[in-house]
Image (tube, rainbow, N blue to C red; front, side, top):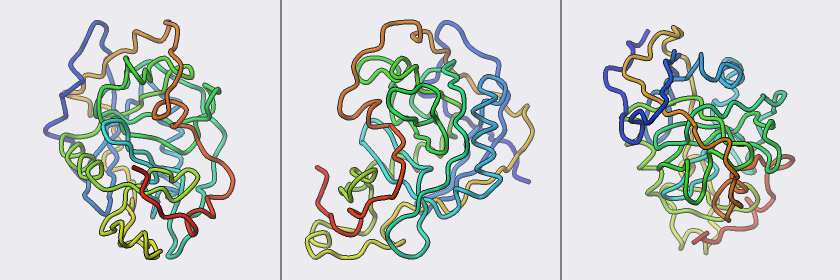
Length: 261
């Protein structure tokens, strides 16, 4: 069994005002661009962590993909898998989990995506915050009831996420309107080159590497102190874009391959 993290990311997670004492199961994300660990906040967001671990235990995230990335905002996944050919397949969703907006959407945290306009609608999709998204525009600590932060990535995890954030994005339609691709160019898109596992940011697996809930030494999640304030209207790259897309993924994956921007 892997040892607990020796160094934990502190950037953007310095305790401000009220801090939480946390417990944290450790899971490992094994991806096509690197492996990293995430500490889950078992005691602060128990319903959300339990929900996430059900998908992990069912191996629902095996061979899943990062279907959306917005630079200086988020990296999003958990909704779709690749089984050797397009189109991607939707990961079956379990019942929605109650929102737990207790922690702040700071750089290096993982939070749940949900249906726009429905605070208690999170199921399988999640996103990593690439910067402090708690206030300003977007204000994820208040929009749509606040987005539930339920874990923190390792220091090395941020290096992996930054590599993903540096990839070019393509509009493959529907939920994949800002999809990061590897080894893929505008010329490939113009030639309608098929997207394969070589190009996708694949999540090969998400596994528990330390099931203990007392591995939180060094973690300092920030409390969400904005949740009672009036939420701002979401803009095009904010909460409305973090919604869960249901139904079939996207005939556009086969038909549309233009650069997002």
